[in-house]
Image (cartoon, rainbow, N blue to C red; front, side, top):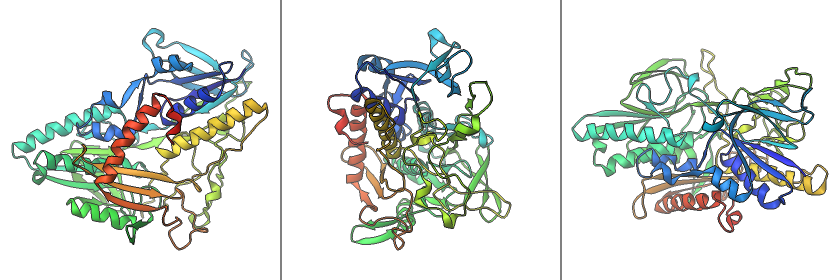
Length: 485
């Protein structure tokens, strides 16, 4: 009998647990450890953040589902790793502190045969002074509670606009190294559309602020897209979208301090500037959770497991941007020191950024961190689960399932509006996620035909359809596994 422990119940953790439970018989334990009591479909937070969807529509409680499916569940947060056990416990284990009401504050040693670290990122609001959501008129859509709060702020502002107030709205990234530009991009389009719907668009100046060097970088170094019968760069598409909606933009901006209605930022040219706002939604930087790791003799071995995020089978050797290749990126998400530990999704430490690193004359790094949300999180979680399943069934290590972000595609759909008959969508599909400049030297490292953009109602319909499809899949309804990651 094997015991597989999954840390985290987001997209990666939930996908891994679902596939493990479906493919392994009940003699094997599958246990999820997460401080969250609910599963949430994070992409739909955008609609919650404009009041077009209720948070209850994007989440459901984990405990009843896991009980029904035979998955163990502990509502707790992990604090430390003991991959060799210690003098008291022979098997490897993690120390977890319960956050549920009935066991709050209690700790437990949770042993395992295989460990999947799917803890995702810490939302590092503290890295930017004054950025904490709910303070200084700044908001977030990173969680459903944040999105609910953002909607409250937005609706209050709209009420003032209906009385004639002229306002300034700023949306984008709230740190020089933040990622998730795609989520901010979708939110700014939805906010703009919501203002139109409520007939107050003329009362708002909307500005996009980002650490990107060009629009449409999205932390992926930009893309060359097939667009109908034409070919265009991603920055040209986003410029077209923003110009059509009268959205201004500020690029190469590293936001470093927030005061009430005032964002301070440094530019790539080394200037220090500020922008005023009445409402702001700024994505924070992501960081690891600060886990500690110890060997059997209680010596600190954190550096064997973590480099901020968890170390996996990537090439972490420092090298200049010109020498980066897709071979730097991991394929199995296995920790090299402890072969029974894996880290899919955002939990793994990337070897470097995807976008070209840039510094201001003051030495400040201003460029996006690499995105690993959405499709990559689900795909990497499934391949980790499949490798563990094969290893258990074959009684020997099996790593036949591989998937590098250098040979993996992804789709991003940024809706604008909500409903069946109204709304629009900007759909971008890219292959591969990490550009392969050797294989595709003339098309910015991507394969045309598999890297394309679309604008229109069809993309909006698809985003709406995916919401319901992935909620169905997450609830493990009949034949859920036929829906791809």
